[in-house]
Length: 157
Image (cartoon, rainbow, N blue to C red; front, side, top):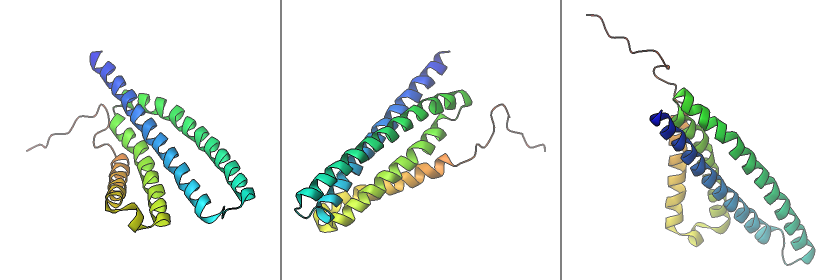
């Protein structure tokens, strides 16, 4: 009983980690599209600035709804992962695409601003995001070696 309670607490802590990663994704998405709007769309026009503000509000609300839906979906997904004994794999399966999306948005922002502007440390962070995202996606796709309730068969000599 005590072990199951600890696993449920772990599920909610991992859920919180995914919630924070996805909030970070929403923030950098907004930062990226505001950079795109300011550098390639507005050009000092007040009308285009108003349109960019409208697009910003619409995209922010849409991303907020997507974030809310993701968080609602992940809570029972992780909780059911505790019951099936695959919480870590489910965490990797959910977190990997989020990290890869963060990588993609960071990479686009780096291309827009230029490598000279963002500096070498940002490039290292982008590389870490890519590697971590790939590792998590690959781990999340692994099949279970032994299904629950099946014991390893010993070799007969």
